[in-house]
Length: 189
Image (cartoon, rainbow, N blue to C red; front, side, top):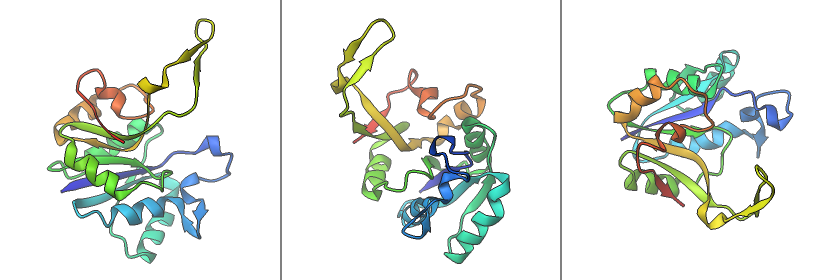
């Protein structure tokens, strides 16, 4: 069994929307609900947790209730790492965790199941980099894209890593940054 944490407390400033992108409707369904509906059907699901901005908790509760979804709502922090820490503090500590961004609705559950089955400590989904990447830090040079992985969520973490997440004080773009120099990361394409 596994805990699923869906992060949706961000502001989504890159989208230029005047509201949280997690509420943007695709096929008349809020974006975050696409992930919620998929993960709620995961056979290894222990409990589903949603990390939400304090001003959006009531709206999320209403949407979940209208869709008969049982989930624990956790108030998010001002930064991603604080939201993740808030979740880790409240989840059932007996189970490993998958952390997922609500703004990624197209996750394939078969890929998630593969991630769970093949990961011992820490792992993530990724896709190949197909764009040509230029390094401009010292002149211009083309980066060998065969050596690159475009990492996404969901990301898997063993329960023995919870303290490392809780003790982290640095802001990051994903939780793998805490572990990438400590452990082998399982990459699932």
